[in-house]
Image (tube, rainbow, N blue to C red; front, side, top):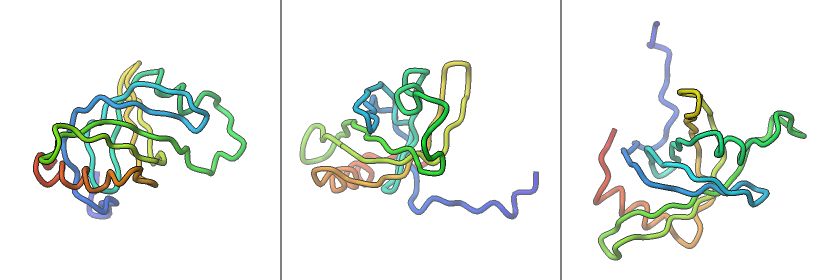
Length: 131
């Protein structure tokens, strides 16, 4: 495959992670997930059929052109506290099925709750392992 025309769309470098996370849909439904990498502008989640059902319970949506929005909650170590809560609003960018019951979701951040952007930035600066 010719890769000369492929352009990296990410604005920030990605860092390897493996955090347990919770995902909350706009309807308030919850599901477990894992944050497998992140940057200051987005993250990658993995999850099973429960995550997919939480975010996309119906095949048909009123407006399929609007992005799917949801919240992600996880904790990161920092130098000032043992762990900091990260609460983010996200929109779905892509979704891929890796195996029968494993899905990978790429997300962009839309909202940083409770000033968690500083904690996320500190985690990346002091603990991040660049991909």
